[in-house]
Image 1 (cartoon, one colour):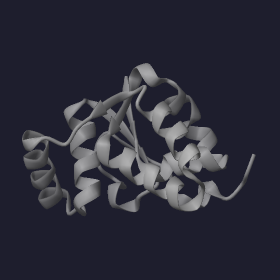
Image 2: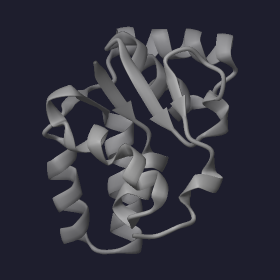
Image 3: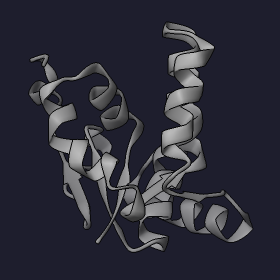
Image 4: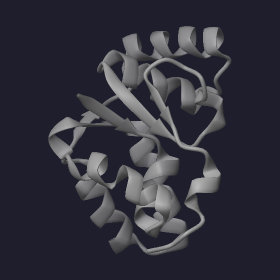
Length: 131
């Protein structure tokens, strides 16, 4: 089964939290990992701001081992439809559309996705403990 990991879960994984431990196996299984380009942007940007470019590049290299899905015209249209139907903001619409296009499970802490089909929602309260 293919898996898409939202930025929130990537950051939990990198921080070594309990939620990060829950998604570790999914993130480390790069053969079945779907990476929307917007997620790559969000994670890289966060690390660039909070850490340094070398750290951001190292994580980006790992992310690029998965199946990177580029936002093209068809995916944009699908994302707009999904955003309207599911009442999702722009980035979340793109991530969910990408996940659906790739027939993958979406792992996320974002409450916008709670209750949607093919979503593994992990409430944020799971993320407080560190390794």
